Amino acid sequence: MKVLNFINGEWKESSSKQFAPVINPATGDAIGEVTVSIEADVGAAVKAAKAAQKKWALEPAPKRAEVLYKVGYLLKERKEQLARMLTMEMGKVIEEARGEVQEGIDMAFYMAGEGRRLFGDTTPSELKDKFAMSVRAPVGVVGIITPWNFPIAIATWKSFPAIVAGNAVVWKPALETPFMAQELAKIFEEAGLPKGVFNVVNGDGPTTGNALVEHPDVRVISFTGSNEVGRKIAEKCGRSLKKVSLEMGGKNAVIVMDDADLSLAVEGILWSAFGTSGQRCTACSRIIAHESIKKELENRLLEAMRTLTIGNGLDENVKVGPVINEKALQKIDRYVQIGKEEGAKLLTGGYILQEGEYNKGYYYAPTLFTDVMPNMRIAREEIFGPVASIIPVKSLEEAIEVNNSVDYGLSSSIFTRDVNKVFTAMRDLDTGIVYVNAGTTGAEIHLPFGGTKGTGNGHRDSGVAALDVFTEWKSIYIDFSGKLQRAQIDIDE
Ligand code: UN1
Image (cartoon, rainbow, N blue to C red; front, side, top):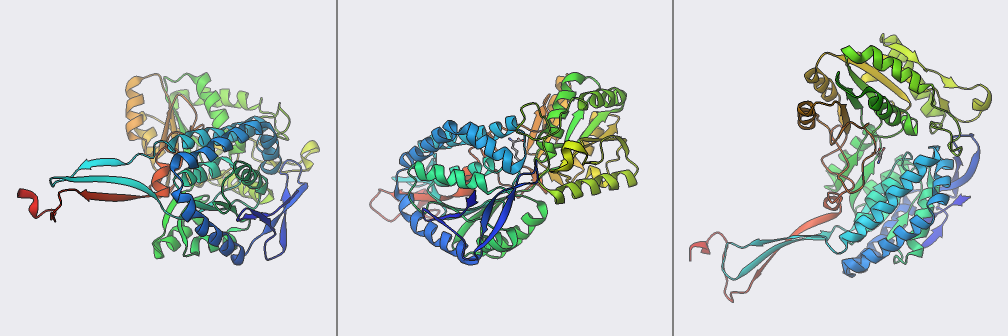
C-alpha cells in the first residue's frame, strides 16, 4: 500500500517525492510506503484548511455533528478490517487493536452529541436590561501531531472535538503508522465532510511537524508524544502565543497495599504493564508494594507472567506483541542494563527475543525487577516497553510519596479493600487519572484524559474538557435598555 497525503479532499504525493517504508513490527517486513512531506505540503494543507474552516464554522453545530455520526457508523462497520491493519502497522495484539478502534467509535458518537450541546453560559449582567452570555467559538486551523502507539484513537480524541466545534484540522500522524491516518481520512471523505476540513500530511517531526508548529495560520497545536519533543513544541508555541495542548507520557504506578486482593492486583498489573508491550502512556511501569506482601506478589506475578504468549498480534492467542522497531528494542534493553547496574534485582526477562520464531520482528521478553529504589533511573524515566519495577514501601503515606516523586503525573492505581485508604489515595495521588482496584490503563473517552507535572501543560484530551482546547470563550453583552449604560460606573443608578 502506498499512502499519500490528503489535502483539500485530494490524495497527493508530497512535493519531496520521497517515500519511507512502513514496517510490520511483528515480522520486520515492509508492508507499504508513505509519502514524506516537507514545508510546502504543510503550507498547502494549512491554506486549504483555512479556506474551508470559514464555511465550516458557519454550518450549524448539529449539522457538523451529522458527519461525525456517519464517521462513527463507518468506523463500526469497518472495525475488524481497521483493527487488523492497525495490528500490522503498529504491532499491538488484535484484541487491543479492536479496543482502540472502539475508542474511535465511542469518541465519534460522544462528540457528535456535542453538536447539540456545546454549552455556553448565560450570566446575569450587573446592569438593568442587559443580557450577558459566553459562547464557545472555534479557534480556526488546528494542527494535530500524534504518536504511533495509538494510531487512530488519539487522532479521534483530538480531531472529533475540533471538527464538531467548527475548526479545520491538519493532522501529522506518526510516520510509522500511516495506514490508520489514510483510513480515517477516507472515512471522513465518505461521511461527506467538506473538502479541506480534515487534512493529513505525513512526515517526520523535525520537518513536517515543525512546519505545522511554526505555521502562523495554525492557531492550536494538540500534541501527544514524548516529553522531549513536547517541551520543544511548547517553547515554539510560547514564542508565537499559539495555544498548545500537550500529553507527554507517564511513569505510572500500581500501589498494592497489604489488604489488597492479590489475585486481582496481579491481573491488573499484568494487563497494564505488559499489554501493548508496555507501549502506552498509561502503562504501569512501577509496582509500589507493601513490604508485607512483596514476596507473595513477586511469586504470583512471576507465575502469571509465564502465561504471557509472545508473538504476532494477529494470532488471537498472543498476549504480548512486538515493540515498534529496533530502536525501541535497543532503548528498552539499555534501560534494563542501567537497572542492573543500579543494583535492581532482575526477576525475569531482561533480554531481546531472537531465537526461532523471533528471529524476525522486534520482541522483548516481559521483564520484572524487584527491590528497586525510587531514585533509580528505571523507576523515574519512561521506558515504553514491557518492563516493570517493584518498589517496596512500609505504609500508604510512603507509597503515595513514592508515586508522586517522579516528574510525570498521568495515571496511578491502588489495590486495597480499605475505604479510608481509597479516599486518601484518591485525594493525594498527584496524577490526572486514578484507578482503584484496577490497573493504570483503560481510560474511557468521555472523561478528561491527561496528567499533571511533566505529563502535560494543564489541558486534557477526551471528555468535555477537550472542547476547551479547540474553542475560545467569547463573552457577549446585549444591552436592550436603549441608553448607554456604563459597567462599573452606572451600577448604582
Ligand atoms: C496512550 O497511551 O497514549 O487508557 C493512550 C488507556 C487508553 C489510552 C492510552 N485508553 O490506556
